[in-house]
Amino acid sequence: MDLIHKFLNLVAPPTTFFFLCLFLPPYWTFKFFHSIINSTFSENVAGKVVHITGASSGIGEHLAYEYGRRGARLALSARRETALREVADRARDYGSPDVIIMRADVSKVEDCSRLVDETVNYFGRLDHLVNNAAISCATLFEEADDITNLKPIMETNFWGSVYTSRFALPHLRKSRGKIVAMSSADAWMPAPRKSIYNASKAALVSMYETLRAEIGSEVGITIVTPGYIESEMTKGKFLLKQGKVEVDQELRDVEVSAVPVGSVMECAKAIINSTMRGDRYLTVPVWYRMTYMLKVLCPELVEWGFRMLYMTEPTTAPAREAPGKKILDATGVKKLFYPSSIQSPEVKTD
Image (cartoon, rainbow, N blue to C red):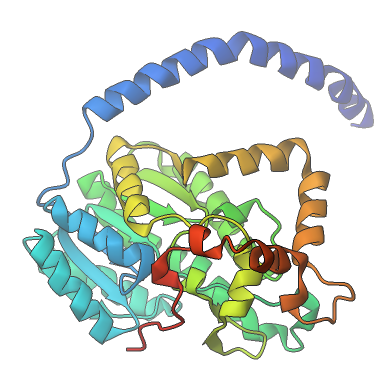
């Protein structure tokens, strides 16, 4: 067995390189023409049924408006019922012919089963499932004295998507529907203070890539990896080490630093256009794709950059002393890089 592995260690690298040189040009040509065809004959979602989790704010809220403009029938779920009602009313005003809401916590498997059942019982079908519900954190791994306080991140971000996808899959097979998996560029970027959040988003990518291999083309899966987009997360809403969700805009400034925050409206449009084309992946804003290339080609440089800008010396110093925040404050680019919608710490509470 060792001889076989030694042989493969020698043969695999040059064989792979030769294969890529031979295969990539026709493959990229095929992908180019395939993308043109998909863009020309993209899906019409008018009258189709779309369920969006985490629809009370941020990307989920604006996905509801954009699907509504295109005539989709909507099922919206989140933990905040009053906020959901407001979103549903606006979605109807934008053009959705029918909208229902349901209060649900996707970290609970029974809620995920119920939200799928209620959607199908009401509309008789399900065409798109948008797994958008998520929470973020902003604490160093070693600062979490009780690490179980951070369990809700994985339970909501990862298991919430897994539960809803499992219950929705039989209905999506019938309609040859689609799943939108909301991951994040943090799935590959090692941003400090977000270790569990980053892990939950990386787990989503792996899970849905595997699911895509299992089900083939019967159900389309678009994996979305947004960068910083205007939302309650970029307002500074985090799960802290004590297990409480709070808004801390100074900590937000540390995490986002001098990185431009994208428009949630443009993000929602890009997600729906990409889903309708049947794209496998979408990164928005598009320039964030380059961060993936940097991570693959020079991971040590990326890790060094994050440590230099986001960490403090000593590590016990307050997070607001991080060099990235000092640069943000000194240059005054916050007004240019941060939309007005995230300048206020106010978030929806019910």
